[in-house]
Length: 456
Image 1: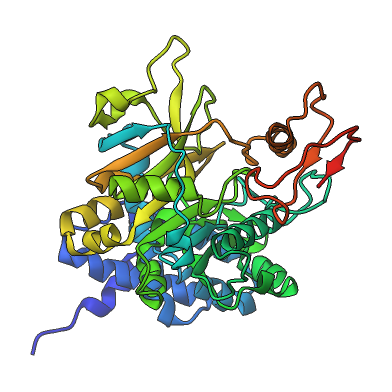
Image 2: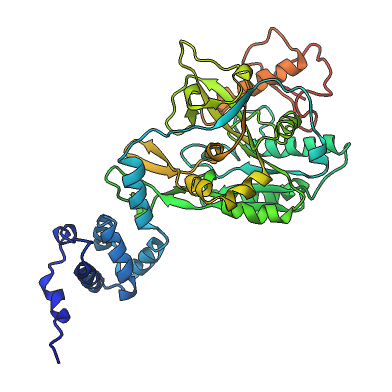
């Protein structure tokens, strides 16, 4: 019999970082060396060798800085620390770093669109017959929405953004059903690991606003990395995790769709726009009449924010140039897609059976830079790149909380002043119309001798 020499390999390895860098992953012998290095580290750090495969993954994914953190952790806490790290897909993060961040390519975004600004007709039937469901996008990132969904944002009523949107939703359901309360409407709310407990507790305290069955979808999380591609840690040796983005929810969405086989459309609405209208009957009429796959609300802006989706006009292939009302100008305004879009359920089902489209959508990630840190996100608006027909509807009504909550409150107030035909007021003279009184300006009486702040 031959002599087994693999036992001696461990002695020849110094277990230094330069040893990791010398590994050639094209050679089978490398994986034997890697296993021995990992076992050696586990022994030195007095952790169970069950974590050897995790250590190997860290080394192969250039996350060796994590191994240095082990030196500063009590032996009793090392097991818990390593268990948490097992949830991170280090290989995937390494791939995103090299293919999304280092290549630094501008997204090529092309699709067939119809530009539309005219839509006066309304469609309440889709709501009344529960053929359109709503998905509220409350996942968000801590650096973007933070606590703005549940906190006082400066409205005279002290209501939070989530309460405003839920009351607005109840109002349109009552208008569509001739003031009958619809408690079992198809409603889904997208949350993240970071805010799930807090928002679900808030809804429980509000008795779910009398809705019987709200379906929750939890976004997966990805770690934040630095410009070397290494996972960033905060205090107490916790990796910084952020939501993967609304574009990651489509698989989970299938269960929600299957619960309501009557559904033909879904409205995805973010809470970052304070004037957003859940189940807007005009938009429902537009997408139904045009038989489009997707309808997106867009605004024109010259703001430059690194974590928002901007697409210039030249990136869109317009199907009907005669309908286009958005043109290039000297200010280089670009179109920004709001978190406000309507999708055909039949289109979503078609994506599942079309491998090329599903793969294209699944592989699109956005690289978000925050100082020296890097986040990766999937955006739900990217779905329009795999559509056959998309309607872009330009709107001027916009009050974005992520830009400036105070400014958003003023913009909402100005809209309500237009509803009431109040003139000659100052921006600081706030007006707030409760959604329980009016969905978007209907059934309002003229106000005489108004005093401010005014709550109706």
